[in-house]
Image (cartoon, rainbow, N blue to C red; front, side, top):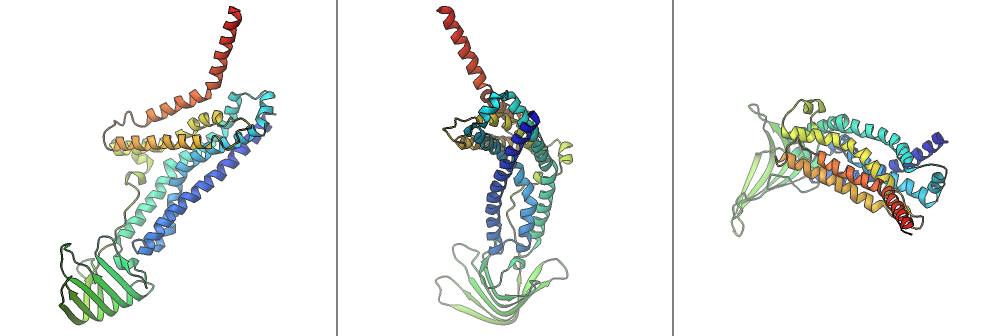
Length: 373
């Protein structure tokens, strides 16, 4: 009987956990994908890197999504059992809250090992790949991410570029239009460059790239002025700048865990504690979720979802803010993130033993009344 009950409870919990994790992962990945897709459309990110970045960052997202999925999986799965009175029947057959916690903790430990593996090894390796992609992206020039048939403005420049056609290797283009804005915000000349064709050229002495335009016209004008200088040319060169993309990860996040263990720097200790904190979330959340899932059949199985989500978000937010305090030197690494875990462990223990304490106090009160009577 206990083995059958254990398999039933584990199956119900893990099925809902997997479903919730998949939905939340899809939502987060979709948001990131739209952000990267906008950068690719604007020409600030090479479209060839888009899916690679998403794939390598997936373990990083899963590290924070799986604990939430487990919490909601327990609340929703056990909440259904309470609503349909299945948990009442199990309790009548001798299933106590402590036994329920033990049965829940066994599959949760497997989830904890998975999160630990992702947090300590898989996610850092993926972020190393992402860091290499960002480095490769930064080495590209603005014209390496040019999209034909679209006006594009690149970060770090005041230049708008347009080309009608572009070869697959991004080396030759036709129908080129370039508008170079004034560098002085109070005024200055504006240049408009038109060319029939253009090609990429590297200098022999350095790695600087130039766009060589052929058979075109350059117009120089000043805002508010009537004079326009027109210059026809056979060959015209424009120095290209590297395209810079704002990175969303820090150097410490991409370091191997073994290197963090041997480091004494404040930032490295904060990152190491963060990686160990993610699997440590699991048993504390399980201890909190088991009593949180207990609902009245009239309340419905979803009544405890909002408190569960808010508790997890508060837990995660405090870990992030405390980690920031360590990085900034406002909190010593010796204290670190452990007080946050201690506080939520006390909260989980208080919620777990609340009914037992209330029952004990009620019995003592009834005993005193009988003695007085």
